Length: 226
Length: 88
Image (cartoon, rainbow over all chains, first blue to last red; front, side, top):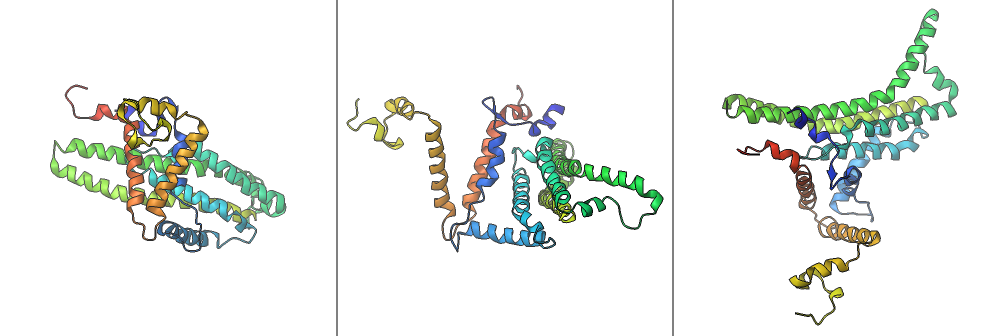
């Protein structure tokens, strides 16, 4: 049973070739590009949603920070669509792989830090020290803030991976429990099924929330550095 | 039985069963041709189900259902052990 548990997280292979790239490209095929002034329903809904999220996300930034809007909105759409597609039965979610999330987190975080260092060196270095600290605590706090700065990309990646993986695992386990309990005691199987239903609703929310959190934090790091 | 019209111009429904293997081999699997086929297929599906004035959820649902079935086929080997059979 142990090997079965993590089988959904193994890289899907078709005829000996890993098809991960195709699965990562798939969500982008579900977002057609707008051609005209008034588009079909699919594009209209997507445009409305994009406008809503971009206004919400990019409101707080200066014009310099708003140059990042394309990057952040596409990041949000990618993570949200990938997570939601992973909710389908038997599907493979690329965001459960730590490699992909670290590959997303480190360049974005490094980009925000580099922007801050290049354009506003004094201010970005000043972020390493919170306001109002007693003088004798300064060296230690600088070290602590530097460590917390370097932990940001790792935290971004691991947060996303762990949330999605844990959610999928829980659903898998509770589903198997329900099936196993059906022959033993029908009422407890029903209770477990209710738990599964609630968990599924939670997972849908988590899929979206995780995308939002990831993007929000990147934008936060950006705000500090512009 | 030989056919009057040359094989190359026939579409799938016009090909007789005996000529099917030679019809398939005739394609010539070059990457540009395969990419062209995918592009044409994508736009055919898009124009039929999405790019209409009153598109419904059916277009998207069919794609997602096909995706689910594709993933099921890919992971059938691991799922075989979970089936309630007497002999695996």
